[in-house]
Each structure stands twice: as C-alpha cells, then as structure tokens.
Length: 168
Image 1 (cartoon, rainbow, N blue to C red):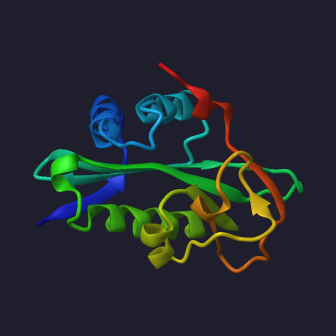
Image 2 (image 1 turned 30 degrees about the vertical axis):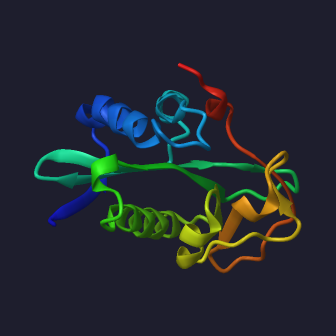
Image 3 (image 1 turned 120 degrees about the vertical axis):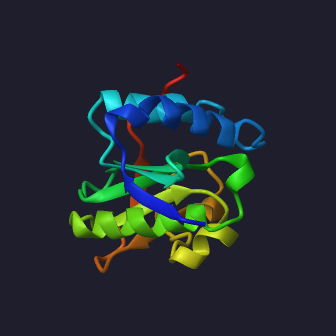
C-alpha cells in the first residue's frame, strides 16, 4: 500500500465529494450530507485543513478541519470532520494516516485543540476523549470528544459553522 497524504487541489474537489458520499452512504448515524458540508465549508472559506489520501493517482480518503466557536469565547479550537475513506479501502490504516497528518498540521498552524463527534473506541487512540464541561448541545456526551494541544481545556458549548447544516 503506497498512500500519499497531501493538501487538496482544485482538481480534487469533485472526487472529494464523490468519495465522501460513498464513505457515508450506508452509515446509520449519518445525515448523508457530509459531501455538502465539505463543499459549504470550502465556499465559506472555513475549510482550514483539507487533506486527501492518494493511492495510484486515485483519491481514497479525505479529512476536513474547520474552526469552531466556543461559548466561553476562547479562539483557536477546531472541529475535525468529516473524515472519509472509500468503503473498499476502510480498515487499512488510511483513516489513521489522515487523522495523524491533519492533527500534526493543525498543531503546526498553532491550533489550541480539536473536537470531533464520533466513536470513542476509534478516536480514543488519537488522544480524543469526552471532557466534562465541554459539550455539543443535543449530542450524547460520550460521542463528543476533545483533544488539547497543551492548553487548558475550555468549558462551555461548542458550535460548528453553519456549513454543517448544508443539504446540497
């Protein structure tokens, strides 16, 4: 497996939408709008990090990171997601490669920390965990997780950009 992780390029945009749609097509806990979210983040200038995993000139994975707003007013925190891997390529470490590369880039850019919504069993291995006092309203607390890059953990509610409401 020879996977390269790199920044998205303009020519990747359609392929990112297709692979994101395919990755979430059969996910039970999905809004099935993830491809629209990525495009809306890009259009609004809120796609801080957009990395793709490429194998033999084909996109096989993608991860997006965008800023979040904290009710306590602290800036410098970001939300990871969606993260997508083509269904026939899942379970081969591509998602892990994207996670590690995107978090390293976020640290390099000076981010204070990152939040995400997902399976604690998967994301815990990257250091994410539910944090008392930090919440995403309407979401079971065990699935909303945070990772600090050395700063104090904020307290309060987290709000994602309006792009996460995109439906087309």
